Amino acid sequence: MEILIFKTNLNHPVHISKVQPFIQNIEGVQKWNVDIQDCDHVLRIEASKVSPRSIEIVIQNAGYYCEELTD
Image (cartoon, rainbow, N blue to C red; front, side, top):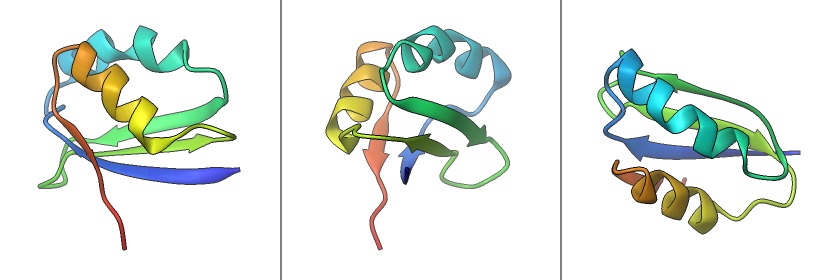
């Protein structure tokens, strides 16, 4: 299991509900959440065998900004 962290522009519960079906359709995603109170609107995903780039593409295809945060 791996934890992937992304900076997004998901800053409202409506945005989260719009991307929910996209994220839930990614094979390997176990849990996910968005911290809309954080200045980076952090998306955290617990997943197995999922590339960060695939998450970025899915969120971007849903119409939102998404960039992996690295150490």
